[in-house]
Every structure is written in C-alpha cells, then in structure tokens.
Image (cartoon, rainbow, N blue to C red; front, side, top):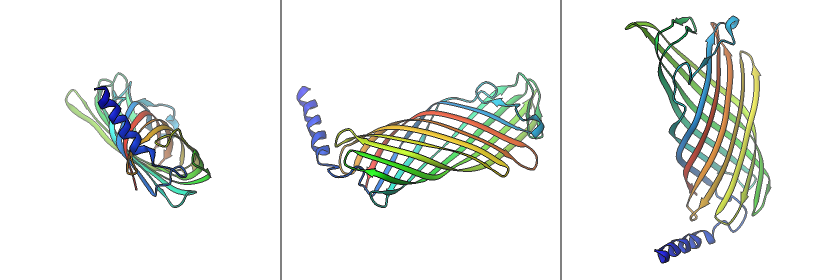
Length: 267
C-alpha cells in the first residue's frame, strides 16, 4: 500500500513538474465543467403597486423554498494574449415550494388569502461575460481589472388553491443586464497549484430599473497535466433589482453562498 501511494505521488509530480514553466496562465483556452453546490440561498420578493413598496415575501419562511441545491456550472477563459482575455460563466437553477399561507399575500393584481395552498417557483438563468486586462503578469502573480456584463433572467410563478378551488395564478418574467467591474488576483503556489481570487461589483440606476450586484470567488486549482486539472471554489454573491412596469414594482433581493467543484480542460 505504501509503495502504491508513493508511486501515485511520483506520477503526479512527473505530470505536473514540467508544466507552466513560463508566465502564469499562458493557455489559450481554459474550460471548467462541474457541479455548483448552492449551500445557502435566500430571496426576498415583492410585486406590488408603488404605494405598497416595502411589503415583501421571504422565500424560505413564507414560500417554503429550499435553501440548498446542486446544479451544473460552466466557467471559461479565452486568452487573446498575456495581457488580454475574455472570461465567461453560465449556470441555471430552480427553487420551488408548497406552502399554506398564514397571512394574505399580494402579488401583482392577485391576492392570495390566508390558508391558501400556494405552489411557487423561481427559475434563474445567469450569464456572465467580462474582459480582463492583466496589468501585472509574471511567473508567480497575475493582477488584473475587468469590465463586463452580468445578465440574470428571472421567471417567478405562483399558483394558489383554497379548499380545492383555484384562487389565482401568476407568472412574472424579467431580464436584468447589469454592467460590472472587477479585480482579479492569481498566485501560483507551485508549478501545479494556483490560488485564484476574483471580485466583481456594480450599481446602476437607469430608467425604470435600479440594480446592484456583488460576487466574490476564491479558488484553488490543481493541474495534473498540460490538458487536465481540477479546482474547488467558494463563492458568495448578491443580486438586487427593482423594476417598475406599467402596473407594479418588482423587487428581488437574492443571496447565494456555494461551492463549485470542477474539472478543467486546457487548450
């Protein structure tokens, strides 16, 4: 057993010893494919007339939505040269619940009375694109700033029944594109092990929409060979938007904490 473990360790060292001899992150394309474990998710919602703004619904307490789930996540980076690159990310998830209301709930033009059996869900699709400029880049450290776009699409569905009779059903959709700015720090601990950090944030008030976004990602990435690696990242994000349409004011305040475990492909 001991000789077997030593043999595997020697093989890993052999694979990783010759990689990344030059500048940090010199690959043309990097793709991360893996599972995003959302360990804690809380959302506050409302869709009411402007005069009732401030009356909100707690997704966990009022709607009985789950707070943890597992979804597929794609991350990638395309490098034009050592100073310029394009970063992108995509993931999608659905939270839902079945609750008996202990107080009346107003959503749009509908009112769901006390004791309504309320089926509810929220689908979210998240797309992120950013251009990164590395103003410092050597064999150990990469420092860079980024500008980009964070796009979140929400679909919120409510369907109620009381004593077996339908009450109301409602579906609300909104797509919120937010520009973001960011900062990135990569530090190579060893030829095969890299510590990666990224922070993105922004606030926008434009027309009928007010939005803010913050995202923090800290990761450790291990490279087995020129082609394959793996990583584990801790993430924390908050997305907040207010959007007024011809009828009502939609408010969404979404917090996510999670872990992203992934396999990396280098090209």
